[in-house]
Length: 316
Image (tube, rainbow, N blue to C red; front, side, top):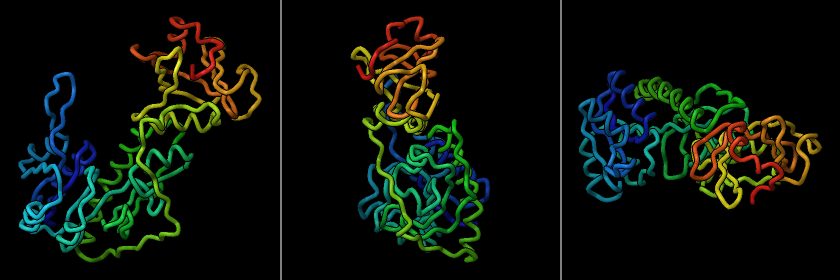
């Protein structure tokens, strides 16, 4: 089978590594990010890919950087036919891309050339897309600009999908697609399709500030933001000077004149233990929320402890 060097970091990448081994591929080495301090113990924790690589008995390397002749020489000495990348978390330098004869294959969670860049799943949900998918591409020096080898069928985006849940689903599909693609690519029965740059869309890195809610936006956009920014950075506003996280929300109405939620955007109305917030267009119902320093609760539980939120204007 194919001799591969694998690059990855999170749990979906560990699943891919295990699938490659299960399919009989020869894993020359596993590259992942260095251990990171996490949890209350503040002890360095290995990545899921490192744990899987050691468990499977493979050579695992965790360089702080992929730049430098020493890394290139080490990779060249492995004599791999191809590199496989899934959520490694770093860009491979140009000097490494030409090492393997069959190139560097990467799983990207979108139907390229749509949603290139670092935040394809978040952006697709935020934009209100109805479907997305997965691409297996050859890495080049651009940001997700390389030719596409395989695409999945379109994957529906449901009205309850969070970025975390959809990412997991897409990477599970991506693992299967990669396993199917490698033998055909190695045998030369697949053709790399150049991307149409004119049809491309590009995402940017999500920042913490993106999660702050602007109630001048429509309820539909805010509801999508709650799902798009779950698990990170989350959506939040401020009440009485404290961070108030909105963990789950739904649209009561997408129209501007909805009874039961009067007032300018950001005004809170309580209706039968429900928290309703007026927006720039329509009404947002907050179903789960978390006040700074407190546990996450349902709207009804929150109102029992903080009834004074009725009539508030957020942020406040």
